[in-house]
Every structure is written in structure tokens, then in C-alpha cells.
Amino acid sequence: MTPLIRTTYLTFIYILLYLPIGVLITYSFNDARFSLLWHHFSLNWYRELLHDHDLWIAFFHSLILGVTSSLTACIMGFFSCSHLFLTHRGKAGFIQHVLLLLIIIPDLIFGVALLVFFNLINIPPGFLSLFIAHVTFCLPFVMITIKGRMATLDINLFYSAVDLGASYHKTLTRIILPLLWPAILSAFLLGFTLSLDDVMISYFVAGPEFNILPLTIYSLVRAGVTPELNALCSLTFLLSMTTVLVAHAISRKKP
Image 1 (cartoon, one colour):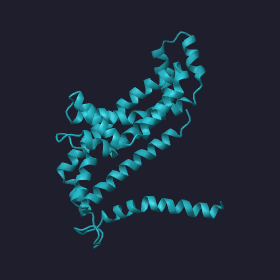
Image 2: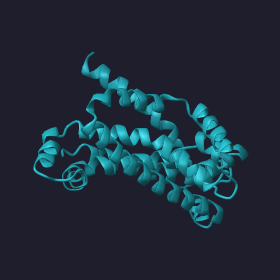
Image 3: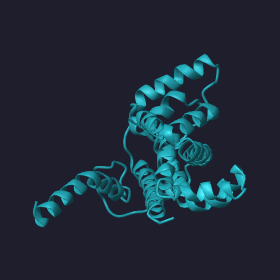
């Protein structure tokens, strides 16, 4: 494949991916009640968005849920990877296949399964059910991210510290953790992005008392697309893209 054909092909793919998002962002600056009728450039809908109390409540709920669930998933993922891929390396291949299986399970099936599970153990829909669900689907991504960086480390660092008398806890906190912090931070940002963007799984386990931003956007879209909704989606896309870029930049740093 010649460089010209490859460049043309990749350009076409990126246009297909990002052209709808570009249209959405463009019409968020439209000074018209209906999104498909362009009048002139205006920031009116962003000002309207700033004064929408319900949307800001949903945004802060999503922020709290994303930070707590991704932080919990990172803590669990770090200790799980340290236990599995440092002290029980023989089982690493099987565990990695199990993690990949959790990632490829359709969100619809995962959401229904969590709904049935919460009904069986009598957990009402709300923050707790959302928190458990988000930790569950973020954990495989977190563990794979941390495991990928852990595979680049020299395992002799771990064994040498243990041979020299360091305890398992001190070895993890003073040697392994400083070397893995870029991967852990990258996994945290990735988990936060997944939590912030999730609709399907949250739809099955959310309750009326704790509304989150993705479900709010979904309910607004069903009533019709408005310029205020375009502004909200534009800001959400900007936040998600910034988080992903920061996570990618951190993950590329060498330990």
C-alpha cells in the first residue's frame, strides 16, 4: 500500500469517526431553538447550560461516581496484579484470558446480570448498585493496563528486595508502586472515562434518587435534540477526550 493510499484511507476513517461529533459541536453554537436550522454564532446555549440545576446535579453525581469507582478499581487492580503476576506468575495466562472475557461480554448482558444479582441480594438501585457495577466493569481494564506496565519491569527487583529482608508490603509500596504509578494513574483516568460515558449498564442498575449525567443525556435525547443538549454533549466529549489523552500520554512514559 502506497503512502498516498494509506493516508487517504486513514483520513476517510477519521472523517467518518469525528465528522458527526464536529457537527454536534458546531450546532452547539447555533442561536436557534431547532438544531438543524442555523441562524448565527452564539454562546447562549452554554449560558443556559450553566444555569440548568438538574444537569449540574447529574454531572456532580457522575463525577463522584467516576472518581470513587475508578479509585477503588485501581486499588483492587494494583494488589490483584501484584499478587497474580509477581508471586503466582504461573496462573497469569489463565487470569488474563478471564479478564479479556469480562471485557468482551456485551454491556446488555452484563447489565441484566447485575440487575438480577442485586435483586437477589436485596441491594436497592442507587449509588451503591452503580458503584459496584462501575467497579466491576472498570476492574478488567485497570488490571490489563497495570499488568502491561508490570510486564516491562525486571522481576529480579522484587525478588532481590525480598531476599534482602524487605517485607511483601514494603516491597510493594517502596519499589513496585513507584515504578507502576504512571500505569496506575493511566488506569484511573481510563476507568473514570469508562464510568463517565457508561449508559447501558447504568440504565439497569440506577435508581431515581441518584441520577447521573449519561442517563440524563439519554432521557433528553428521547425528547428531542436541542442546542443545549449539543452544548452538554460537547463539554462531555471535551472532558472525555482530555482524560483519554492524558491517560495515553502517561502510559507512554517509560518506568
